[in-house]
Image (cartoon, rainbow, N blue to C red; front, top):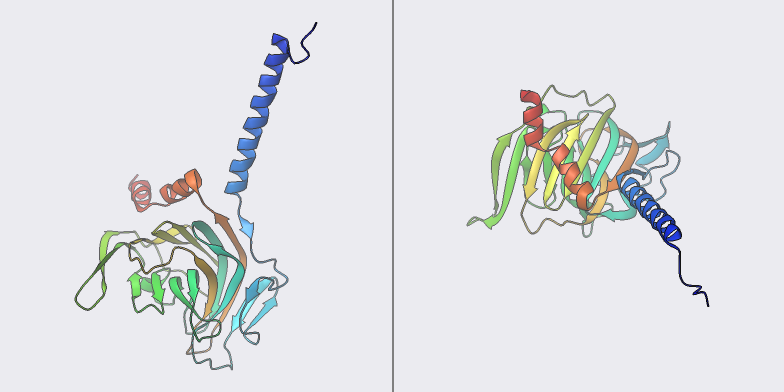
Length: 265
């Protein structure tokens, strides 16, 4: 009697090839999905974003935040509540008007007793060239961690005043200053305790922050700063969550070592 579970060698070969092809396709689709950026602003609404309603609006498919005529007392943020971020690559185009500064918060934590307040790491957007794209620790007592053009290591060890040790371990060619009133693309790559900031594809800081008080999971926020009137416009906000090989590749492609080697050649 014929065994109905027996497959002839030729059919076995065909099935093996099909299985291999399907497996390869699944692997490729998985890699493609990991590599894609996801838009977190649809250009039409502030769905999944929360902030002080009289400060934020949509105009010409961009988020517009302004303090003109508002005289805010504390820094305030438009906060993305769609998901928290851990290891990721964030991109956003932004332009700023006014004699003030702004920033993009990431892995941020809610600030107690302050509506739409955040604390944590920030990519600073500042008119002073040395502060453009720097790593600033908002509302943590640490302040400036790395200025533009610096590769920095932050130790978890503390001095007698309870402050962590911040060491500049390398320099990054800063390039020319950016005109903040024009559209510029700001990027943050954060994997583990390492963060790399870029403006228009140029690395501004490379920070390894070993301070254990720095959270590795949190929120994204756009800042309106107290002080002089200011307006920011933000569009094309997208994120790619990183893991495994994608995370390693993102760091390697934007590492200061590779940057210096490229410039040298």
